[in-house]
Length: 250
Ligand code: G
Ligand code: G
Ligand code: MN
Ligand code: NA
Image 1 (spheres, helix red, strand yellow):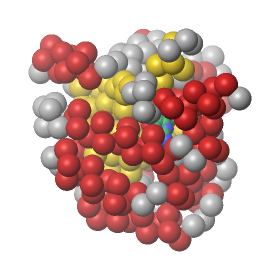
Image 2: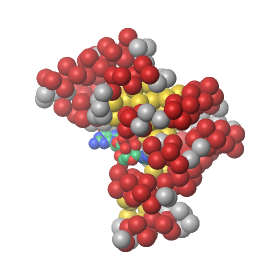
Image 3: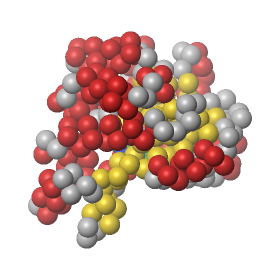
Image 4: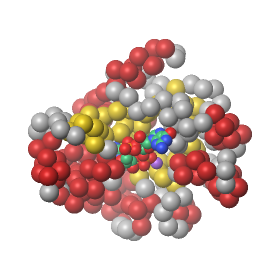
C-alpha cells in the first residue's frame, strides 16, 4: 500500500506538523487553551488528515513513535506561550496499550518545562471499553501528576454513563454531532441539555466542540457549557499563529 509505505518514512523526513485549535471560555470569550491536532504534510498529496493516517499508524506499529514525537513537540511549543493557556493532547488506545504513557507524559513535561497543570489528555470511550486495569492505573498516575483527563467525543460510544463514575475525569467534550444538529433536531437539543445537566451534577468542565454558527454558540452558552471550540471561533493553526492570537487577545 502506497500510503502505508510513505507513512513509514514520514517521521524521518520531518513531514508531521501540529496545528492548535483554540478553545474559549464561553462566558468571558477569553482564549483559555488549544487542542493539539496532528497533520501529515505529504510531499505529493498535501495535508492528510489524522482521521486517515492514524488508523494506518495504529495497525503498523508506527503510532507509538509518532505519538511520542507529537507529545514532545506540543509540550515544547506550549512552554513558550502565556502561562494561562492550557494544552489538550489526544491519546489513542493503541498508545496506552503499546507505550508507557505516564513515562511519556512526565518525560515530555520535564524536557519542555511545561507545568503539569497546563496539560490535559483527551481519551475516548473506546479506551475504557477495554476495561484494562493498566489503563486505569495510567490515568490515575496522570491525575496524580496534576494532569487533567478529558473524555472526548462524548456521547458517540457505548454505555458512556457507566464510565463517568469509574474513571477520574475532569472534563467532557460533547461530540460535535450533537452540536451540529441542535438547531434542527429537537432530540439533539434535548441530549445537549441533558449532558450539560449531568456534567454540572458531576462537577465536570464541559467543552462544546464543532461550533460552526452563532446560533450553536448561543445555544451552548444558554445551556451553561463552559468552553467552546470550532471553526466559527478559530481554525486549527500553526504555533506561530496561535502565539500571535494570544497577543491580540490578552
Ligand atoms: O484534526 P482532525 O479532525 O482531522 O482529527 C481527526 C482525529 O484525529 C480526531 O479524532 C483527533 O482526536 C485525532 N488526532 C488528532 N491529532 C492526534 C494526535 O496527536 N494523537 C492522536 N492519538 N490522535 C490525534
Ligand atoms: O475527535 P476530535 O474531537 O479530537 O477531533 C477534532 C477534529 O475536529 C479536528 O480534526 C478538527 O479539525 C475538527 N473540527 C474542529 N472544529 C470543527 C468544526 O467546527 N466543524 C467540524 N466539522 N470539524 C471541526
Ligand atoms: Mn479531541
Ligand atoms: Na472530539
